[in-house]
Length: 123
Image (cartoon, rainbow, N blue to C red; front, top):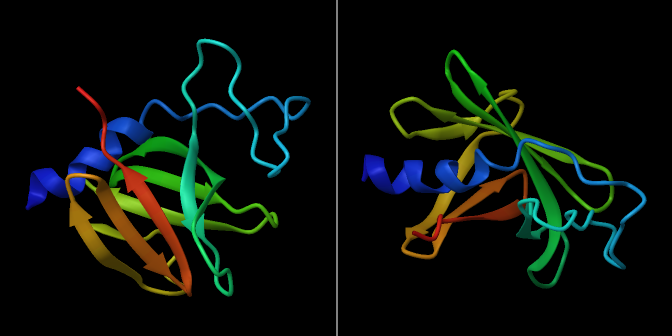
């Protein structure tokens, strides 16, 4: 189980950079420069009817683990911590994070009504 929770982290670790704001898609999510990793993920902000690939994620290594900042299209964001032992929690503690699914496709996390699909890394 621990390795399943760490798998999304491997992909997201490469997404530490911010996109070029001059290169925005119609959705508002920054498109990556050619040859750069794509840091967009599927998300369903609270109140949205379906998932769309409009959120971006940045990651930073910290003493506790990987700190993920997931930015929503409306400018809001959520911070998640993937601990060294693989547990995922809310980094700022305001609202708890819940793991809704953890399978071969990735890990789906819900926090405050927002849902995020953290993908697995392809080998």
